[in-house]
Image 1 (cartoon, rainbow, N blue to C red):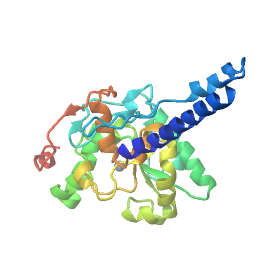
Image 2: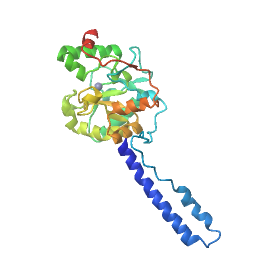
Image 3: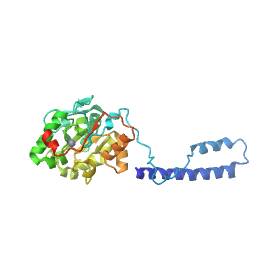
Image 4: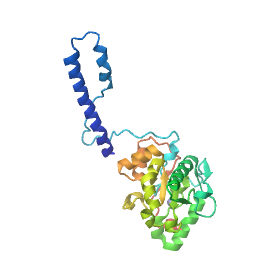
Length: 280
Ligand SMILES: [Zn+2]
């Protein structure tokens, strides 16, 4: 966030300099012209005081992005924050079949679905076919997915790449695993190097989506790099996350701890360990 703040400071300094010049010119040139004093007033009103330097250790005062009216769109679910088992998003809608690669229906919350379809249509108009492999997952379905991961890869690896039920962003109805023909409509790291993966990396934030589990951040996000897992957070918040250089995990955590996000009451829980593999 400090990088964002420093960018805001420069215009402030320029405005202050412009104010000083404007005041000097008004005094030097307009002092004897009666009736013209009001003409100088707007330029004074336009000026804003320069930003005060932030004292060392002071809290970051970067203005937050415009937050959505429905703050549940910013709910954080991760290894330390579990959703209630009975939480089902209120506004799930089906994703059009032409944008789904897997068998069966895939759904997302309505704001995420609308943004996703707009994004995939834009990619399509550029000759790129991107589809959803997996959208909303219920608590029970996530349990099935996790059990499958444990069976296929063992407990330790399953915990690195799949969420224990209750801890998945897919249960929020705000996450979509995206894929293309270049990776056989599967979920592969090489997706990042495909034209579709590159296009998403560049354009997804404009539609309100960010990559949840970025490269080299497993210690923070709790999960291996997943270049296919996009999370909807609204366009202003996606832009703020991109500018911050933080992971969505860190950014949404900070928003929540600043009491700005009234979420769907996830509960704190211990980091899932090996016992999670036998209890699900
Ligand atoms: Zn995913």
